[in-house]
Length: 79
Image (cartoon, rainbow, N blue to C red):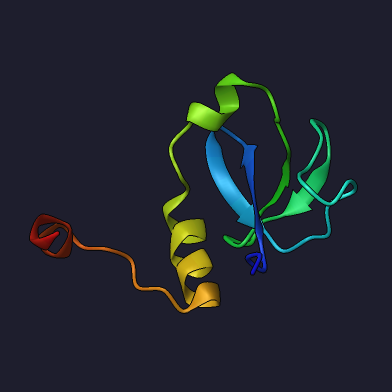
């Protein structure tokens, strides 16, 4: 089942958005999106942009939308 959001690099971080995607897969560079951290940003779908760190506020909101807990360091060590 697909997630109710799409990851999008923008403003030097990987953000998430529930905006519809023009091609059903992602946001082309230059597309304006409203992110889960409540910022209006311009997508940068360049290869290097996918290496940027994840926006912490979008990460929390994405986990809330999916009902998945954010792993903590102690839980990760238990694996």
